[in-house]
Image (cartoon, rainbow, N blue to C red; front, side, top):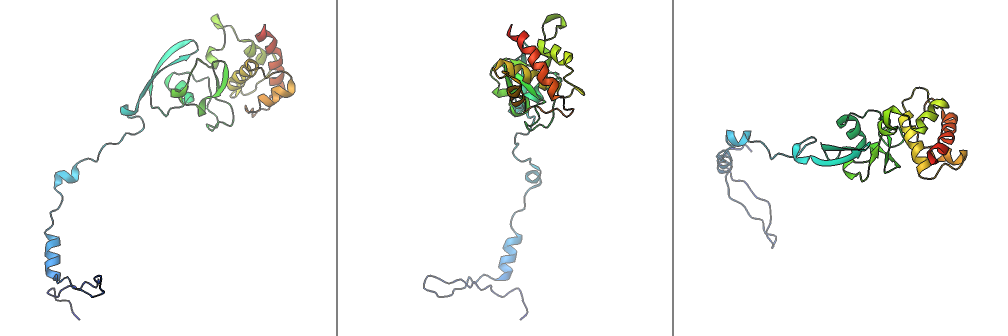
Length: 215
């Protein structure tokens, strides 16, 4: 049957008693009422949606003071920023290396209050205690830390990319009392990977430095 526009639309729903009922609304009325619905104004269509904070938005910034290499450093950063990125990108301390960025290679190891921490897995806003990076490990006037000197003496690096993390981890290993012998040193340093495989020399360097550090 042809649709004429004056036909009424049949509502096939039923009431509680099961009796069908009809809405009695003509197609013409329905189409006319739909067409007459007010369209959004141009101003409304162009109105921006409610602003939501995005990465780097000033409304999300966190202000904090970190003690890094015996100096107080003020930072205003996204609260999701890792300690690793804070050191490298905001403080210019690029000695701490970004390796896997998943806490598996140890290249980003730094010390917090003398203990080893993975910078890529630590939020800067969560840091409690002084931070030491490879730049702040040595003494005044450019004097090397005993562990730095031992790595040189024992040739405990080749390409050097992992070396800052290896040295900081080795210092932490001794500070934490986990350098009793070669087997313990190897176990405690297993979280720091060396693609150049300088592991035997690293163990020798730690054995050399631990006496100087304890004295």
